[in-house]
Length: 305
Image (tube, rainbow, N blue to C red; front, side, top):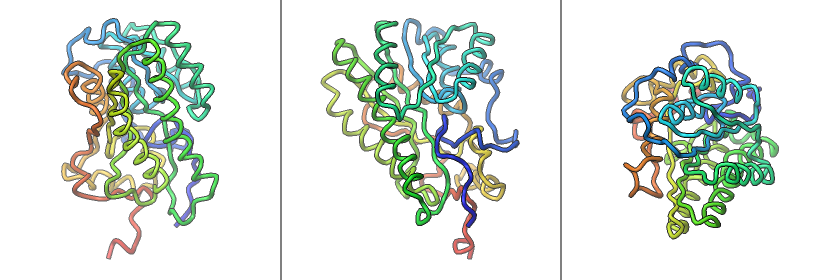
Protein backbone atom coordinates (compact mmCIF):
# COMPACT_ATOMS: atom_id res chain seq x y z
CA UNK A 1 0.00 0.00 0.00
CA UNK A 2 1.46 3.36 -0.97
CA UNK A 3 2.02 5.82 1.86
CA UNK A 4 0.04 9.08 2.10
CA UNK A 5 1.74 12.34 1.28
CA UNK A 6 -0.63 14.67 3.06
CA UNK A 7 -0.01 16.20 6.46
CA UNK A 8 -2.27 15.44 9.43
CA UNK A 9 -3.11 19.06 10.11
CA UNK A 10 -6.17 20.61 8.57
CA UNK A 11 -9.25 22.70 9.18
CA UNK A 12 -11.79 20.06 8.19
CA UNK A 13 -12.70 16.74 9.68
CA UNK A 14 -12.69 15.29 6.18
CA UNK A 15 -8.99 15.86 5.56
CA UNK A 16 -6.42 18.46 4.59
CA UNK A 17 -7.77 20.57 1.77
CA UNK A 18 -4.30 21.84 0.95
CA UNK A 19 -3.43 18.38 -0.39
CA UNK A 20 -6.55 18.12 -2.50
CA UNK A 21 -6.52 17.55 -6.23
CA UNK A 22 -9.03 19.07 -8.63
CA UNK A 23 -12.24 17.07 -8.38
CA UNK A 24 -15.04 19.66 -8.37
CA UNK A 25 -17.76 17.00 -8.28
CA UNK A 26 -16.61 15.99 -4.79
CA UNK A 27 -15.50 19.31 -3.35
CA UNK A 28 -18.76 20.35 -1.71
CA UNK A 29 -20.89 23.47 -1.86
CA UNK A 30 -19.73 26.89 -3.00
CA UNK A 31 -20.21 29.96 -0.85
CA UNK A 32 -22.87 31.14 -3.29
CA UNK A 33 -24.74 27.90 -2.71
CA UNK A 34 -24.30 28.17 1.06
CA UNK A 35 -25.79 31.64 1.02
CA UNK A 36 -28.87 30.56 -0.96
CA UNK A 37 -29.58 27.02 0.29
CA UNK A 38 -33.05 26.59 1.75
CA UNK A 39 -33.23 25.87 5.47
CA UNK A 40 -35.99 24.51 7.67
CA UNK A 41 -35.16 27.07 10.38
CA UNK A 42 -36.80 30.46 10.76
CA UNK A 43 -34.90 33.70 10.18
CA UNK A 44 -33.69 35.36 13.36
CA UNK A 45 -33.57 32.11 15.35
CA UNK A 46 -30.14 33.05 16.72
CA UNK A 47 -30.52 36.81 16.95
CA UNK A 48 -28.36 38.10 19.79
CA UNK A 49 -26.45 34.83 20.13
CA UNK A 50 -22.70 34.32 19.75
CA UNK A 51 -21.61 31.11 18.03
CA UNK A 52 -17.96 30.07 17.91
CA UNK A 53 -16.90 27.67 15.12
CA UNK A 54 -13.44 26.14 14.83
CA UNK A 55 -12.13 24.96 11.47
CA UNK A 56 -14.48 27.31 9.63
CA UNK A 57 -12.14 27.98 6.73
CA UNK A 58 -13.59 25.15 4.68
CA UNK A 59 -16.00 22.24 4.49
CA UNK A 60 -18.48 21.60 7.26
CA UNK A 61 -17.10 24.36 9.46
CA UNK A 62 -17.66 26.94 6.73
CA UNK A 63 -21.19 25.66 6.08
CA UNK A 64 -22.08 25.95 9.75
CA UNK A 65 -20.66 29.47 9.89
CA UNK A 66 -22.84 30.46 6.92
CA UNK A 67 -26.01 28.94 8.32
CA UNK A 68 -25.68 30.38 11.82
CA UNK A 69 -24.85 33.80 10.35
CA UNK A 70 -27.92 33.61 8.12
CA UNK A 71 -30.03 32.79 11.19
CA UNK A 72 -28.87 35.93 12.96
CA UNK A 73 -25.96 34.76 15.11
CA UNK A 74 -22.78 36.70 15.65
CA UNK A 75 -20.33 34.07 14.41
CA UNK A 76 -16.72 33.98 15.56
CA UNK A 77 -14.44 31.62 13.64
CA UNK A 78 -10.91 30.30 13.97
CA UNK A 79 -8.60 27.96 12.10
CA UNK A 80 -5.00 27.44 11.06
CA UNK A 81 -5.04 29.15 7.68
CA UNK A 82 -5.80 32.83 7.75
CA UNK A 83 -6.46 33.10 4.01
CA UNK A 84 -9.29 30.54 4.24
CA UNK A 85 -10.79 32.26 7.26
CA UNK A 86 -10.76 35.56 5.37
CA UNK A 87 -12.52 33.87 2.45
CA UNK A 88 -15.28 32.68 4.78
CA UNK A 89 -15.61 36.08 6.46
CA UNK A 90 -15.62 38.00 3.19
CA UNK A 91 -18.06 35.56 1.60
CA UNK A 92 -20.53 35.88 4.46
CA UNK A 93 -20.25 39.66 4.40
CA UNK A 94 -20.71 39.84 0.63
CA UNK A 95 -23.45 37.24 0.26
CA UNK A 96 -25.30 37.45 3.59
CA UNK A 97 -24.48 41.00 4.72
CA UNK A 98 -23.32 39.71 8.09
CA UNK A 99 -20.15 40.74 9.93
CA UNK A 100 -17.85 38.13 11.39
CA UNK A 101 -14.64 37.98 13.41
CA UNK A 102 -11.89 35.50 12.69
CA UNK A 103 -8.68 34.53 14.47
CA UNK A 104 -5.86 32.36 13.09
CA UNK A 105 -5.39 29.62 15.68
CA UNK A 106 -3.87 26.17 15.95
CA UNK A 107 -6.07 24.39 18.48
CA UNK A 108 -3.07 22.31 19.59
CA UNK A 109 -1.75 25.47 21.25
CA UNK A 110 -3.44 25.35 24.66
CA UNK A 111 -2.26 28.84 25.64
CA UNK A 112 -3.42 30.25 22.33
CA UNK A 113 -6.81 28.61 22.81
CA UNK A 114 -7.12 30.10 26.28
CA UNK A 115 -6.31 33.60 25.03
CA UNK A 116 -8.70 33.30 22.09
CA UNK A 117 -11.61 32.13 24.22
CA UNK A 118 -11.11 34.60 27.06
CA UNK A 119 -10.73 37.41 24.52
CA UNK A 120 -13.95 36.43 22.79
CA UNK A 121 -15.88 36.36 26.05
CA UNK A 122 -14.42 39.71 27.08
CA UNK A 123 -15.40 41.27 23.76
CA UNK A 124 -18.96 39.95 23.53
CA UNK A 125 -19.77 39.20 27.15
CA UNK A 126 -20.84 35.67 26.27
CA UNK A 127 -20.46 32.76 23.88
CA UNK A 128 -23.68 30.79 23.54
CA UNK A 129 -22.47 27.86 21.42
CA UNK A 130 -19.08 26.29 20.75
CA UNK A 131 -18.79 24.07 17.67
CA UNK A 132 -15.58 22.07 17.39
CA UNK A 133 -15.16 21.31 13.70
CA UNK A 134 -11.38 21.68 13.41
CA UNK A 135 -9.42 18.49 13.08
CA UNK A 136 -7.72 16.28 10.56
CA UNK A 137 -6.06 13.01 9.76
CA UNK A 138 -4.16 11.18 7.06
CA UNK A 139 -4.95 7.69 5.82
CA UNK A 140 -2.45 4.91 6.44
CA UNK A 141 -2.35 1.34 7.63
CA UNK A 142 -1.98 1.43 11.40
CA UNK A 143 1.09 -0.78 11.48
CA UNK A 144 2.95 1.89 9.47
CA UNK A 145 2.15 4.90 11.70
CA UNK A 146 5.18 6.91 12.78
CA UNK A 147 5.23 8.26 16.31
CA UNK A 148 5.11 11.79 14.93
CA UNK A 149 2.09 11.03 12.75
CA UNK A 150 0.22 9.33 15.57
CA UNK A 151 0.87 12.17 18.00
CA UNK A 152 -0.11 14.82 15.45
CA UNK A 153 -3.55 13.31 14.88
CA UNK A 154 -4.21 12.66 18.56
CA UNK A 155 -3.00 16.14 19.52
CA UNK A 156 -5.23 17.85 16.98
CA UNK A 157 -8.41 15.79 17.17
CA UNK A 158 -8.49 14.91 20.86
CA UNK A 159 -6.30 17.35 22.76
CA UNK A 160 -7.15 20.40 20.65
CA UNK A 161 -10.86 19.70 20.98
CA UNK A 162 -10.45 19.31 24.73
CA UNK A 163 -8.59 22.61 25.15
CA UNK A 164 -11.50 24.34 23.40
CA UNK A 165 -14.11 22.54 25.49
CA UNK A 166 -12.43 23.05 28.84
CA UNK A 167 -11.53 26.71 28.43
CA UNK A 168 -15.00 27.60 27.19
CA UNK A 169 -16.63 25.67 30.03
CA UNK A 170 -14.45 27.52 32.55
CA UNK A 171 -15.67 30.83 31.19
CA UNK A 172 -19.31 29.73 31.38
CA UNK A 173 -18.85 28.52 34.96
CA UNK A 174 -17.02 31.62 36.12
CA UNK A 175 -19.55 33.97 34.53
CA UNK A 176 -22.61 31.96 35.60
CA UNK A 177 -23.71 31.48 31.99
CA UNK A 178 -25.32 28.48 30.29
CA UNK A 179 -23.37 26.76 27.53
CA UNK A 180 -23.69 24.43 24.59
CA UNK A 181 -20.89 22.41 22.96
CA UNK A 182 -21.18 20.51 19.68
CA UNK A 183 -18.26 18.30 18.63
CA UNK A 184 -17.90 17.05 15.06
CA UNK A 185 -16.59 13.50 15.32
CA UNK A 186 -17.01 10.31 13.24
CA UNK A 187 -18.80 6.98 13.37
CA UNK A 188 -16.41 4.79 15.35
CA UNK A 189 -18.49 1.87 16.66
CA UNK A 190 -17.07 -0.58 14.12
CA UNK A 191 -13.65 1.02 13.86
CA UNK A 192 -12.13 3.02 10.99
CA UNK A 193 -9.72 0.90 8.95
CA UNK A 194 -6.82 2.93 7.51
CA UNK A 195 -7.63 5.73 9.97
CA UNK A 196 -7.02 4.05 13.33
CA UNK A 197 -5.40 7.11 14.89
CA UNK A 198 -8.38 9.29 14.02
CA UNK A 199 -10.75 6.58 15.27
CA UNK A 200 -8.95 6.53 18.62
CA UNK A 201 -9.11 10.32 18.90
CA UNK A 202 -12.75 10.62 17.81
CA UNK A 203 -13.80 7.86 20.18
CA UNK A 204 -12.00 9.77 22.91
CA UNK A 205 -13.95 12.92 22.07
CA UNK A 206 -17.25 11.03 22.06
CA UNK A 207 -16.77 9.49 25.48
CA UNK A 208 -15.20 12.65 26.83
CA UNK A 209 -18.35 14.46 25.70
CA UNK A 210 -20.61 11.90 27.33
CA UNK A 211 -18.65 12.17 30.57
CA UNK A 212 -18.57 15.94 30.88
CA UNK A 213 -22.19 16.25 29.77
CA UNK A 214 -22.93 14.69 33.15
CA UNK A 215 -20.29 16.60 35.13
CA UNK A 216 -21.22 19.93 33.61
CA UNK A 217 -25.00 19.57 33.83
CA UNK A 218 -24.88 21.42 37.15
CA UNK A 219 -23.44 24.38 35.25
CA UNK A 220 -26.24 24.23 32.66
CA UNK A 221 -23.82 23.18 29.91
CA UNK A 222 -24.98 20.72 27.27
CA UNK A 223 -22.47 18.64 25.26
CA UNK A 224 -23.32 16.62 22.14
CA UNK A 225 -21.60 15.22 19.06
CA UNK A 226 -22.37 14.92 15.36
CA UNK A 227 -20.88 11.95 13.50
CA UNK A 228 -20.90 12.61 9.74
CA UNK A 229 -20.47 9.87 7.17
CA UNK A 230 -19.35 10.37 3.57
CA UNK A 231 -19.88 14.11 3.09
CA UNK A 232 -18.80 16.03 0.01
CA UNK A 233 -16.12 18.51 1.08
CA UNK A 234 -12.80 19.72 -0.25
CA UNK A 235 -11.18 17.12 1.99
CA UNK A 236 -12.72 14.22 0.08
CA UNK A 237 -10.54 15.08 -2.90
CA UNK A 238 -7.40 14.04 -1.04
CA UNK A 239 -8.26 10.37 -1.42
CA UNK A 240 -7.39 8.09 -4.38
CA UNK A 241 -9.90 7.84 -7.21
CA UNK A 242 -10.55 4.19 -6.44
CA UNK A 243 -11.56 5.04 -2.86
CA UNK A 244 -13.64 8.12 -3.65
CA UNK A 245 -15.66 6.24 -6.24
CA UNK A 246 -16.74 3.75 -3.57
CA UNK A 247 -17.40 6.08 -0.63
CA UNK A 248 -21.08 6.57 -1.44
CA UNK A 249 -21.61 2.83 -1.81
CA UNK A 250 -20.86 2.34 1.90
CA UNK A 251 -24.34 3.56 2.85
CA UNK A 252 -27.70 2.08 1.77
CA UNK A 253 -28.82 5.39 0.28
CA UNK A 254 -25.85 5.10 -2.11
CA UNK A 255 -25.01 8.77 -2.35
CA UNK A 256 -22.89 11.36 -0.57
CA UNK A 257 -24.30 13.68 2.03
CA UNK A 258 -23.60 17.39 1.85
CA UNK A 259 -22.33 19.95 4.31
CA UNK A 260 -25.84 21.37 4.71
CA UNK A 261 -26.95 18.09 6.27
CA UNK A 262 -24.36 18.62 8.99
CA UNK A 263 -25.01 22.34 9.37
CA UNK A 264 -28.74 21.89 9.94
CA UNK A 265 -28.06 19.14 12.46
CA UNK A 266 -25.77 21.55 14.31
CA UNK A 267 -28.54 24.15 14.41
CA UNK A 268 -30.90 21.57 15.92
CA UNK A 269 -28.39 20.82 18.69
CA UNK A 270 -27.65 24.51 19.24
CA UNK A 271 -31.26 25.62 19.36
CA UNK A 272 -34.09 25.43 21.89
CA UNK A 273 -35.65 22.42 20.15
CA UNK A 274 -32.91 20.20 21.65
CA UNK A 275 -33.00 21.68 25.16
CA UNK A 276 -33.43 18.20 26.71
CA UNK A 277 -30.65 16.54 24.66
CA UNK A 278 -27.16 16.11 26.09
CA UNK A 279 -24.45 13.46 26.04
CA UNK A 280 -25.66 12.13 22.70
CA UNK A 281 -24.22 11.47 19.24
CA UNK A 282 -26.32 12.23 16.16
CA UNK A 283 -25.12 10.19 13.20
CA UNK A 284 -25.52 11.83 9.78
CA UNK A 285 -24.31 9.15 7.40
CA UNK A 286 -27.11 7.80 5.21
CA UNK A 287 -27.17 4.56 7.20
CA UNK A 288 -23.48 3.73 6.80
CA UNK A 289 -23.12 2.87 10.49
CA UNK A 290 -25.07 -0.36 10.04
CA UNK A 291 -24.33 -1.05 6.39
CA UNK A 292 -20.83 -0.74 5.01
CA UNK A 293 -17.17 0.15 5.33
CA UNK A 294 -15.23 3.11 4.00
CA UNK A 295 -11.68 2.39 2.84
CA UNK A 296 -9.98 5.79 2.41
CA UNK A 297 -6.99 4.29 0.58
CA UNK A 298 -9.11 1.90 -1.48
CA UNK A 299 -10.43 -1.54 -0.56
CA UNK A 300 -7.58 -4.01 0.00
CA UNK A 301 -7.54 -7.07 -2.24
CA UNK A 302 -7.96 -9.28 0.83
CA UNK A 303 -11.49 -7.85 1.30
CA UNK A 304 -12.47 -8.12 -2.36
CA UNK A 305 -12.41 -11.93 -2.44
